[in-house]
Amino acid sequence: MSVSTMTTKTEPTQPSSTPVGFNVLAWSAVMSEQLNPIADRLKTIGYDGVECFIDNQPVAAYRQFGEHLAQLGLQSTCVTVVGPDQNPASESASVRAQAVDFLKGAIDRAQAMNASVICGPIHSAFATFSRREPQPAEYAHSAEVLHAVGDYARQAGIVLAVEALNRFECYLCNTMSQLSTLIRQADHPNVRAMFDTHHANIEEKRFPEAIRTIAPVLAHVHISENDRGTPGDGHIPWDDTFRTLAELNYTGWMTIEAFTRNDIDFANSINVWREYNDPWDIAENGLSFIQMMQSKHGFRA
Image (cartoon, rainbow, N blue to C red; front, side, top):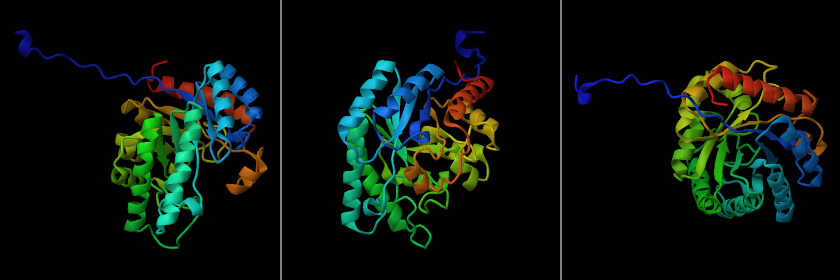
């Protein structure tokens, strides 16, 4: 048999390892030097990076934290939300302009921290409802804002990973199907999507189908238990999640997002009324759980 007619057995592609991060919102939404010792311990535990909240705090505070992370050898990502005065889906052109300005400011802060990703429900105002189903014009307005901000993100080397939330926190994007439609409308290489296991547990019928739906634009994953406590302690379909991500050769961040009442103002703003687990229990046992699941489903170490 000639070389040209031989058939070669192709081995399944082994998924690459993915960086694992921890969202410091479990301690505080405020950027300050008080996060430094938290980052130190997360590095010791074995995390690849940390995720922090971005709002309108001084750019210098993010730069200082980024310098501390660099000294530790930690990478970073960020999360943010928009309010009703900066709503990308608003019918008001002036409100949409404020959305662009706010998100550009978030990009400036993320760039100062050397972050690679800004994730969150930046498609529409958090916990703001129109009392009707999503309208085509709202998707169009949101997509226009995201495309404009995508240009700004590209020059900063940052990916915007847009997040779908559950029905109790937003109405524009609850599912991966809705989110995929919006990202296609935004039509920008720096505007991509995030999959959050907590929200998917409420809104999606089956995780594998949801993940495959968003796979072409998937850039970030939040590992979050159904009760927002330690991953692996609840009823999220973790095997389905990790198996599907492995099959798709996902190589982006897997970042734990869990909540506590350590930051009272933040906890009250997102309706967290009780403690789920101690944050260090979440960090230590959560990392062990992710590493175990990655190994089980074939991610390279």
